[in-house]
Amino acid sequence: MISKEHLESFSYLFDEEILTGIQKVAQLKSFKKNDIIIDIGQELKYIPLLLNGNIKVLREDDDGNELLLYVLENGDTCAMSLTCCMGKSASKIRAIADEDVEVIMIPINEMHSWFHTNDSWRNFILQSYQTRFDEMLETIDTLAFMKMDKRLFKYLTDHVKLSASTTLEMTHQDIAEDLNTSRVVVSRLLKQLEKEKKIELGRNKIIVIDF
Image 1 (tube, rainbow, N blue to C red):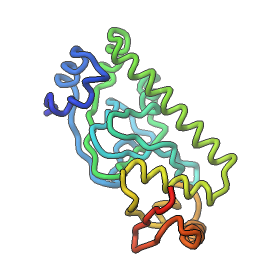
Image 2: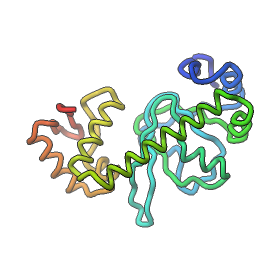
Image 3: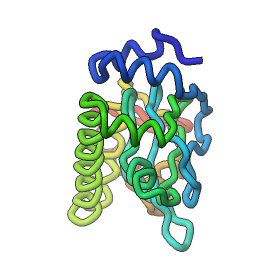
C-alpha cells in the first residue's frame, strides 16, 4: 500500500492529480541487494520509480559480459525501461538492486495516459530521458577516452557520492563486472591506487581517501 508519506519526496515533482493517481494504481515493492528488478528480454508492464536505495542499470553482450550504464538514485526512473514501454518491446537492460531498495511500480497504461494529459508527469519523463542520455554519453566517453586506472578511480568516487560514505563495501569481482574487465586487473589497479594513497584496502571494503 502506497501512503502519502511514501510520496512526500515527490511532491515537488508532481501535482496532486499525479500523486493521487500513483496512490490508486501503483504497487510498492521491496528488493534485497543484488535482486534483479528488471531483466533483459522481460516484457515490461510497469515502470519503476525509485523510492529509496540505488539501482544499477546494465547492458549485456553476447558472451554474458555486463557493462554498467548508469545508477539510479531516489526519485529516479529508468529511461531505458521507459523507451521499451513506449515501444511495447522487451527490456534491453538489466536493473539490479545495488542495495536494499523500495520501488513504486507504475502500470505502463497509466504512464501513457498521464504523459498526454498531465504537464508535471510529462516534464518528469522528458527530464528523465535527458538525464539518463547525458549519463550514457558520460559512460561512452569514459570507455572511449579514459584509461582503466582513471575509470576505476572515477567509479569509486562516483560510489562515494551515491552512498554518502567514503567506505565502500564491495569486492574486486563486483567492480570487475561493473567495469567489464577482469578481477586480476582491478586488484592490480586498486593496489596501485593504495600506493598513491588515494584509497585504503580492507576485506571486501575500500576506503576512498582522495576524491
